[in-house]
Picture 1 (cartoon, rainbow, N blue to C red):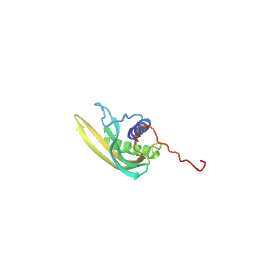
Picture 2 (picture 1 turned 60 degrees about the vertical axis):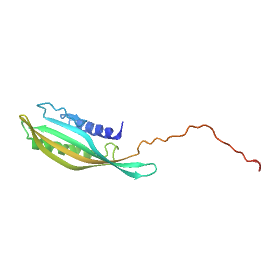
Picture 3 (picture 1 turned 120 degrees about the horizontal axis):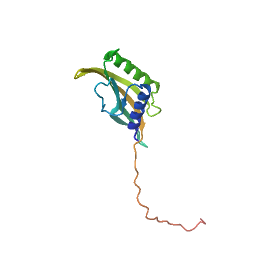
Picture 4 (picture 1 turned 180 degrees about the vertical axis):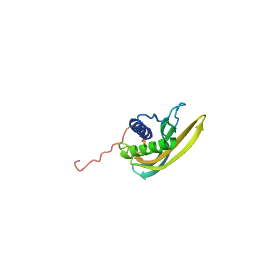
Length: 161
């Protein structure tokens, strides 16, 4: 399994175990049904590579970890309060294990965007949290060897060797 998938699955599992009453999806598509109150989506969007070491080649990878929330007004709380509470809880959860169990080196919250959209009769509140994660990786390198067909061996006579 590649590192991006491991990171995405780890974060989604961490959130699912900590926010038991909210479905967490590991892809960009949220199959939210009408009447669902809350959902979370975890994905990795952009990734930049920069050489870090030359021999063997090691890359410093910076990725955008995106966590998207969708909420609808609850009888007891409005969407703004739900979004604020959920984003604060997610920050707390990810801050507790900043290396994602040693999968990454650094995780920094870059921005949180909130917005609202109307879908039929329902108004949905949404938030997108973008974390920059940094980790180091050695790309899979394959070395092609020539087929061994034989060798020339020369012995020098003399000097008792």
